[in-house]
Length: 170
Image 1 (cartoon, one colour):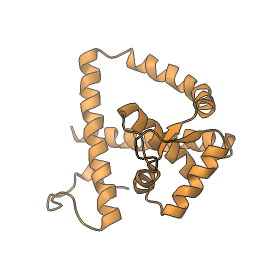
Image 2 (tube, helix red, strand yellow):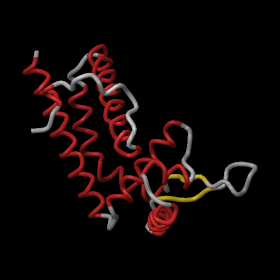
Image 3 (cartoon, rainbow, N blue to C red):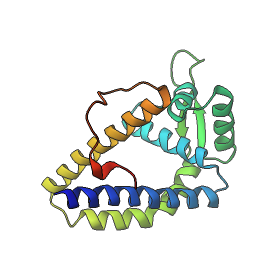
């Protein structure tokens, strides 16, 4: 079991590195900063959840100052990737939406990866995919909590438990 756990952690790490390489390639081809791409992904995920981001929430999500967030939004808006909308009765509230030209570029770039990913998922039963989803959700929660601890300097969970050897870098 220890070998399987070690392999799983190694595969997650390698997947993360490769995903970042693909993301950097997309950002580079579009003349974007990596932070710009992170902003686009955050906006896209918020839209999918039905809770569009405001500039303030985007800044919090990315850990950016107000000025840096505005610079990111301005760059993305000029490039056609993002748009600001006013959707509430309070006209001061601005929401960020993925703009159609930016979405078309992203779809064209990432479509081959989507095809490959679907082919891999087709090899698994629905029950197996449910297990994978549960596992990935737990792993995402674990890394998100650790990131929050690093940003705030306060543990979000008891850290008295010894970490699993396989999770240690090196």
